[in-house]
Image (cartoon, rainbow, N blue to C red; front, side, top):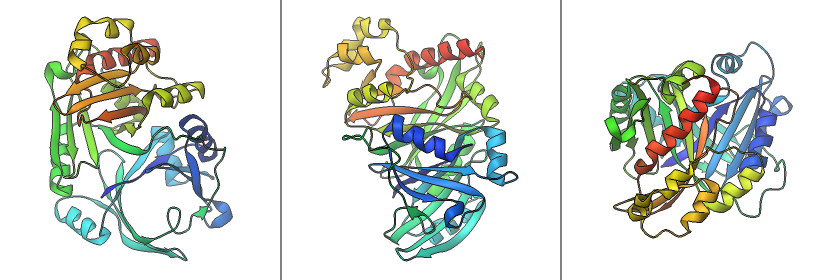
Length: 357
């Protein structure tokens, strides 16, 4: 039915909650910690429109969550999906080859009940399957309502999770997993020159549910002259995992301005991208002047359905792993294929600065 939450494992949930409140304009809505029945970890739940981030951090040593963070750094633990029937979804997944992590179970409080289960996917990532149709609380039973950490902005910066990208070592195997286990279909495939630069290359398939509400691009490294961004990620994350989260916005220009003012660093786009005479011919009429896009480094692409505007942050933690994308769609269902070369060259410049190219 859609994305329920992106659940992060972080070293310090309180500080992460402050960062996503300040820099991403999100509003905290729920909390769980030692004060209300969770002796081993603190959980802050933040929302922006329909997008929900759950930040889990250990409060004592020796926990499995702490081990995960020591191995991978801050990153995405769980891409939780809303389903109409968690029990049926879990049984279907296992019958089609998924590995179960948590069997379906009921969580209940005065706001109602939630049925939840979880299955394993690539690396140590999991998918929780969440049926919250009989629940009216802020997140899950056991989580208390909590106020915002700072006053939220008058206008939210984004309102939904557009897609979640996984970096894997065997793309076809994981695409087949989503076909079998979740009934997803291939939405797009990028290979060869589609997705290569002079130095590095990767291959990508996009799997999605029938409604296109849940979209998971899957990347794997391809043979190239130098280390690709996917190889860098796999090295620093310690295996497969979620590379970036794309956030849907209705006004990318104002969101970029506000987030940049709050300290978010975006990838630089060279002026030559906008000076290319073929760009204007390719994109046609868009809602804002190209000069305004250039001021902010926003990329633009068009396909047979319409156009999109997009921009990517630099990694948001010390390890060069997880980053974010802002995307504003005007009909286009694509992923900015026309921007791949410019984007990957920008990523390579950052890799070179880190000494990892």
